Length: 173
Image (cartoon, rainbow, N blue to C red):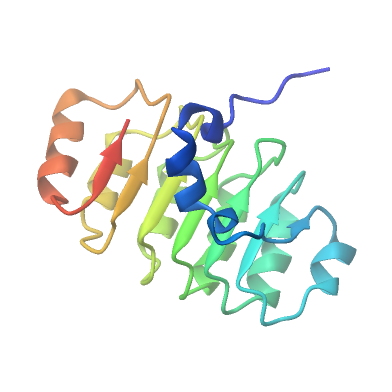
């Protein structure tokens, strides 16, 4: 059986992981894996944990929950740029955690960086991202937290530029 990539929550200090997630308030967001589970949630749902999903389930989430504020995509999910493109329909999305970005490219960051409410982005295992992604994110002046572990592909120059462009943002590579 193929092992999932290392979870970013295992790499964070426990206080950072808890502060970033809704579990800090004492409750976990509901977990969904199937169309039926997605459709059972009220359309007013604002936070979701997506487990074992694919692009089409991400499309359903984006269409069904226009007020979504927090989205966690587990390391068992299999999403691509196509799935991320559906998130453009979520103007209130403020926190995004993607624990397996192995199929995501700069195009996904283009979509995420255009979300007007995005404040926190955690993206693990995303080797296809380039310095272009950091350039796009450096324009997000309202970004307060950016976590891109396992990101050896970024140049030191691009890392320095984004840190300088976003002085109010905690950035961890």
